Length: 382
Image 1: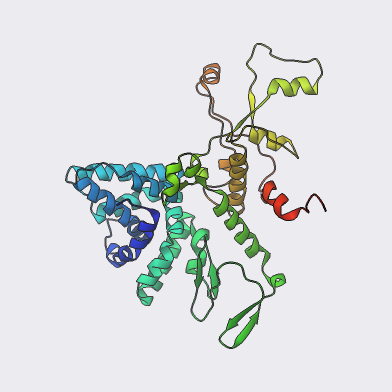
Image 2: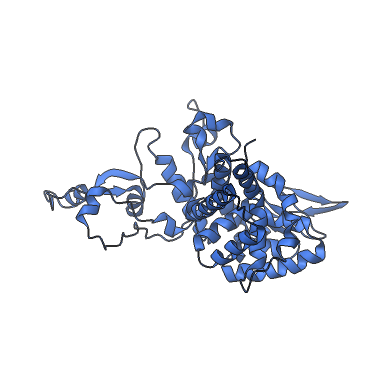
């Protein structure tokens, strides 16, 4: 039986019953015990699946790797996958890592590797680890745990991502598709218009009184969840039948180059002038063109990356608006990969430069024209 994200979620409640035990596994003076224990218990279903495969002489299960990649991508996901591979190899040789080993590795690397911490944050958020931990722990234990975790998340720089789970009262909304209600409050999921009925009491919701910052956060979170997806069904139809048939776009995106070059731009701005004709002209990236133009149309064959580029820009701007540690303007302007010819021309010690972006954190409003035309435009006869 393959290991899927759904399998992972279904096994988490049993895993979190061990959280109190993990919190007793203090190793030396290493800090961030609460975060490490939470991350360790969240990883436990996947680790147990891979350890069982190792003990049966099987290689690292591809389904487990795919599940991890869809939850925690990027550099941090690769670091985590590499360590899981090492643990799997140890288990193959009869040295299955203990809970203490796993916790010690997490605590040791949390502060040293920011990318790993971002991947673990993503895992905790997407698997809804905090709500499940709260549901499993007795109320008194949860209060103590939440207080300690709050401080550790602040130290790690991850508190904004989980703050709504740990603070305040009333209706708390955090992450994608998550709604949590505190004591004596209501939880509402999806879109709400009109009235909310609490017993025999009617509560009228006025959208004009909604906090703009809350609306902006909800919008950006929705856009981020909607656009940060790469569906494998378009690459391999067999993947469409799988539960984990998508990857995070931000984890696998490669910069898109256009056919426009520096030489064309110089010649176009100064008629008759072509400089450095012996040099192969450098092609502009799509981001460079977008940075220069107020209006831009990308032309290309189907599957050439036009929509993927738009989605990637949207994801980075939305992430920047949410102050994401991983999805932000730094990711948007990642230096272009150098081809062999360019690498040979440049000095080996020259650092690659980020792509230009001079517009800061804009509010992304993606519009699919075919959908807009179908819904928003009158018929030709009208």
